[in-house]
Image (cartoon, rainbow, N blue to C red):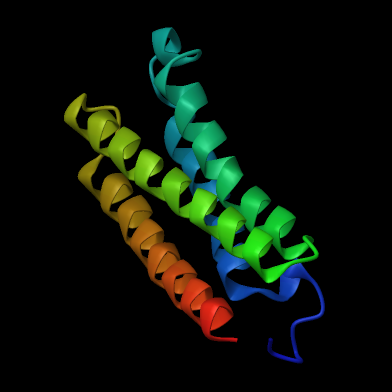
Length: 122
């Protein structure tokens, strides 16, 4: 692993995950009240799981555990992409908000794929 990485906070993918959470909370604050315990809650939970699972995996003692947590993170990304698409179709998100979140999700997905590959080849 890169010697400049001292904690999970140094990982660019974790930093992007934190950025994603802040964006998601901002985008969902104006969702309808009747979605508070539905889509809003699910979207927020999925977004929080992205940096959380990256951090938890980083703290594991084995590369295999780390990879497993990164794969769980990838699942959360796909879940979130689906939920955001539904939110856009329900007109809860603007096109701009949807595109901004989706672009960030795709960037994180690429970063995770690269990290998983590096760990597998290590």
